[in-house]
Length: 87
Image (cartoon, rainbow, N blue to C red; front, side, top):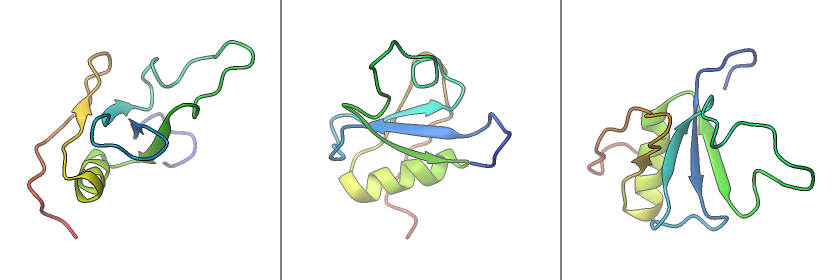
């Protein structure tokens, strides 16, 4: 994601990517971007992938797991069905 911009997307999954948990967020979403309590970490126990392009994350997740991502119910990112297209 370009520095100085709040546009972009975060794919939340488990540390070992899993088709059972693929949630797409906007980078501005409070569920993945807020001050944490002392001793808390964003990446434990979750894995994250970031991109300026929501479709790129969705296609990558589909290639890796065979499943589509789900959009966060809080920030409502655009989620389009992936049907195996892409490389």
